[in-house]
Image 1: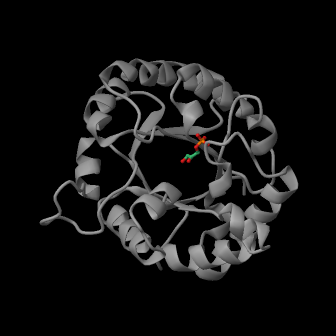
Image 2: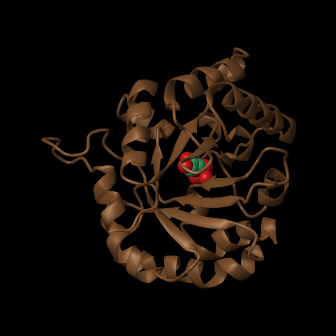
Length: 250
Ligand SMILES: O=C(CO)COP(=O)(O)O
């Protein structure tokens, strides 16, 4: 069965109201750029979600949050629940991004709880995994991916409620990417591990590649077996770049 790819953007801590114009352009251009062959999601800063939802209401581009709390509600100053993201217009939420694992000390256990909270609110969890430069240097990449998948993907994961994003930490924002063979090996390993841990749907679950995806390398990365789309940081901020990347599927 072929998997419908997902071209996802992660704006991280970038963007104010003026940047919603880029979202409008993405909405207008995505169908034609991708040839109608892929889905699109932009994970906005939470402050822009509700206004962003107004801008893309009838379009192809769906919205997501970048993190959520694992509790449904409560005394957690500054945090945002999955239900709040859903209410603001999100359909996806990223959990376990390496920047959260590093900046906020998030463990796989916490990420698993966040993914469950996302599902409970009706959001698709985009669960991120990936090795550091040191781990790769020590030949531990596949072991790290196994460990993070087993720790972060909750029981009950399905192709409908979960997307996996493989983001080598050393490739994020650096302009560096793994070789295509290395990407293929990592994604095949992730697919095989999902088959072990998921009750069903491992072959239909989307596995995105993220880390320095840009217009010049998107086509070759997206053509690698078991790469079912991209999670794009910097190059998702401008509609021109994002739509150029979407052309990988045309
Ligand atoms: O972290 C990423 C997306 O979540 C990737 O970021 P860059 O595309 O800027 O390398």
